[in-house]
Image (cartoon, rainbow, N blue to C red; front, side, top):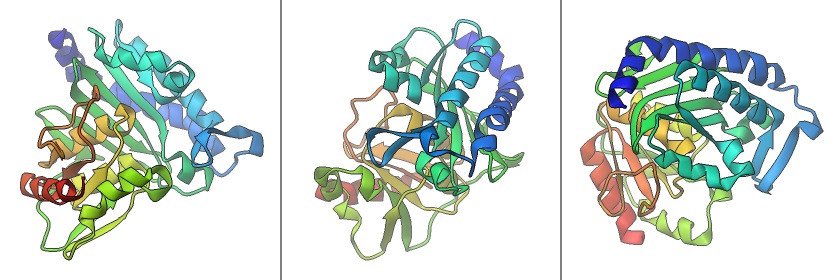
Length: 276
């Protein structure tokens, strides 16, 4: 199977980019700042929103991606919301596309351009390629395992931070009291934490050296798989509070971090472990 994936990536990376652009043009951007009240509904609560654009874009991408790579399966956020058992397909013995059709739905609903669309191509828990597309910003970031990370054709290099660490963390609206306590380790001198926006765009900010690290307290694969590869291929690293790399299949010790370099990831874990 790995040979099938590698062969696909030799020729198919631009096809996935095109599929993303078409889904955005057909289902997302025509609804940006044009949503009617009935186009937006709550899932688990007032901060967990889904729009008609999320659902239709995921349907569009599911058809396109399984056509591009026959025999592959899609694990999408909205399909899993409808049928949670589909999440186990991440472990399928087939190429798996992990899809977040609109990452940063709250931003999208509020007319903020800070949202993106995420795709990761995985097999047996390993991410082989990822695509992060911010249609309102016209930015496309692509990473291929072992071949680097790129933003609109320019190579991404995360670099290393200075003495002051700027960190994006799980947003308070989405965290439990226990999760908030676990992130208190970052409330120290030399660290400047702030609530995250779109997780996908925060990972992109780390990969391009504009943000030093992220610290997240949830592990849903569609939020993290694409960005973790993007950061890794830009020279960054990720660790959970157990000191192990993040596993997209789940079962991670939380919170976890992705950072511009390995030393920063280790420092982040030390701070997070102190409060975990």
